[in-house]
Length: 139
Image (tube, rainbow, N blue to C red):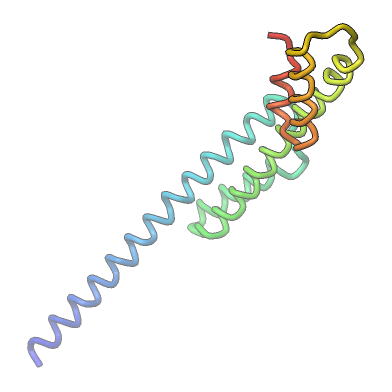
C-alpha cells in the first residue's frame, strides 16, 4: 500500500508532464501557423490585393491563440494564409494577363520569345500567377 501511493503520484506527474509537453508542441505549431499567415497577409496587403475577410480571420486566429484555443487558432491561421496566398496569386494573374495579350499580338518574334510566351500562357492556364508574371515582365 505504501508503494502504491507513490506510484500513483508518479504516474499522475508523468501524465501531466506529457500533457504539458503536448500542449507546448501544439503551441509551437500554432505559432508557426500564425507567423506564416502574418507573412502572407502582409504580402497581400503590401500589394493592396488582400481579400475582404482575410485580415479579420487572422485577427480572430490571434485572439483564439491568446485565449489558449490552439486548434481554432491554427485552423483560422491556415485559412487566412491560404486566402492571402490565393489573393497574391490572383494579383499576379491579373497583372500578367494583359501583358501576355500584348506580347501575343506582336509579330516577328524569335522562336525563343514565342516559347516564353507559350510558357506564360501555360502558367496563366494553370493559375500560376507569379510564374506567369515573372515570364512576361520586363527584366
